[in-house]
Length: 402
Image 1 (cartoon, rainbow, N blue to C red):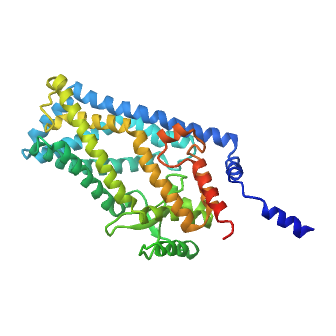
Image 2 (image 1 turned 90 degrees about the vertical axis):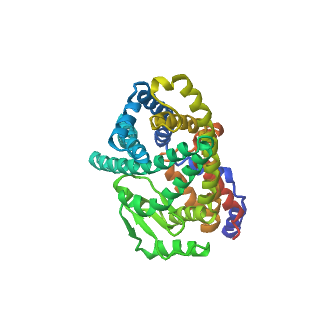
Image 3 (image 1 turned 180 degrees about the horizontal axis):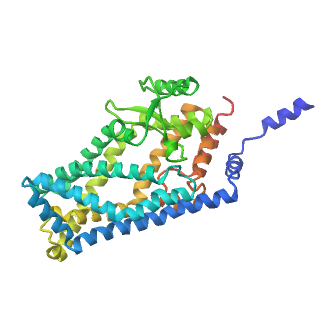
């Protein structure tokens, strides 16, 4: 009789929707309210951050400060590319200082309010200062190249400006894992063979020739779990943070790492470079039209002579901010589609649908698990927790006999 009952239970169909709801119900009402408030607050931060950035640009232009900064750079050095670099460094420093109240609220106080940060203010300030220094140097290099194109190619500057931006993106992707990331965290080889060996096996079975996995000490800054398979053209490395190691089971780690390996195997980095290149061409075409129109109306008051005049940099930055703010749903959808592809890859590569669903719940600590369809389309650059858990349970339903 017991055997017959067991067979009856086992023969019951797997209800995907019921399994999804069972996972989602594990988030308590208090946890849901907290997660939703944090994530939905991010929508407003996007708006206020955009308005703040445009306001800073307008302040620099309207007061004539941008033109005076250009004049100062011209008095200090005679070589024009170096004038551009000096202006760019000054602009980054000044804009960052003006933006500091917003940055410190968003990056420090708000993270601590929602118990997502572990860093002291002095530690956070140190990382902020390092990031500022790195940004100043990188933007100086970028704008030297960009304004060189603007001045030498007055008719097609918008097209070649997009090319410069793509080349710079590739440059940052190359140097980031090797030279920038170690400025903020310590990377060490993962020693535990119970964790490392399955990850390496996953990588090798999917054509990735690696011999090590690295962990980094993100727990000194945040409670979030994360991992990446980053770099290319010889800088590729598999890395996961210590929160993932300390907070997740082996099945969950396997699912996360399979997702990151999926990005690499599916060539998402190259795909995104091409897609972002197209997006940037359209962005610079928009800047070409709008910059000329705005300069025609207010350029004399601002002291901006043309696109090749570095004093117009705040206007350039503001116009790009407008473009990418409007493009938010498009950019999020582009990224979200890639993330969904990596999710499906992860389920096939790891065979851990429940581990995958468990991680989706953990991410629900700071990502709203169950948004509406329009909300997900506009604001989510990753599939929602509900979408991910549903994908995992659907995959599980189709592989019950294996």
